[in-house]
Length: 185
Ligand SMILES: [Zn+2]
Ligand SMILES: [Zn+2]
Image 1 (tube, helix red, strand yellow):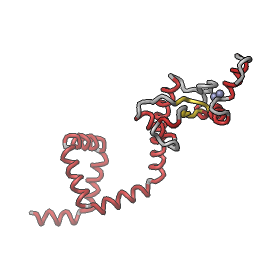
Image 2: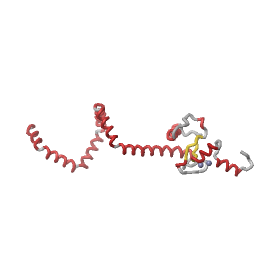
Image 3: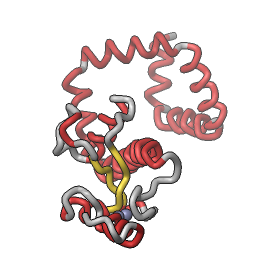
């Protein structure tokens, strides 16, 4: 009987394959649904099986992963960049909104254009963070350290002016000169 079945299969291989394929294609939705349900029901078993397979076929899995990365490099990089941007924007918003007590703006002149805004360290030596920290590291450090005082939001213009004018933005010097003309600096 088995021999007979085998012979029958060998003789009609292509026809049987086509029939199976046709059946699967016409029941695609149904199959996807039952596959999904099966996976959900047996998630632990599948994970464990996958884990054991990965250990046993370490090199093969590594190579497959490598090939996948090479093949989809551009898309993966694109996705990574988008995820990175969302992460950075979120960090930026948390920190700048905190020090502006709402909509981020320059504490000196009120500039609100995000591209101009910077974080100014008012008391440079008091904190343990590295002065040369690049922005996202600094923002993360600020959040991790529970928003220490000594920081303010300034626009690039005021920040530069403050540096060039011994720690006071020229805007303030001008305002002081107008408001208090009799007090010399
Ligand atoms: Zn400003
Ligand atoms: Zn200013």
